[in-house]
Length: 110
Image (cartoon, rainbow, N blue to C red; front, side, top):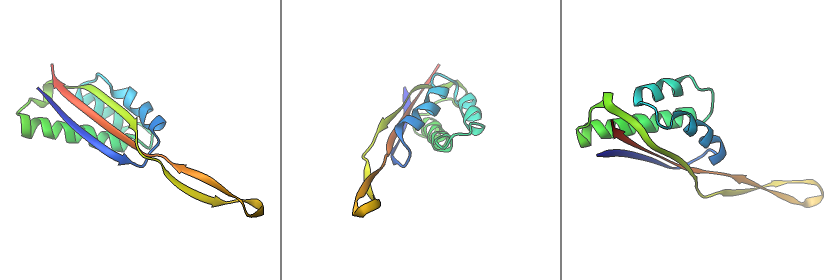
């Protein structure tokens, strides 16, 4: 049995989210949450919330034991990019790309 949670259109670049995601892959749920609590990255609170939500899904929807859960899969994929424009010299404009991510987690029991 597996429990999953997905956060879509998160306003953080995928490269930044992948750094945090790689830290907790394969860890026990409680250990992963403890690591994320003290990780000084912008994506850490987002991934913390996502793993917490997946653990709640496992307990409430699938009757799984929280003590046995571990992060089986976790990924950060690229979402749509919002394009904005910034004025530059001599009447020109430069594109600013505001990148988004789709972050997903799958928890399984050991």
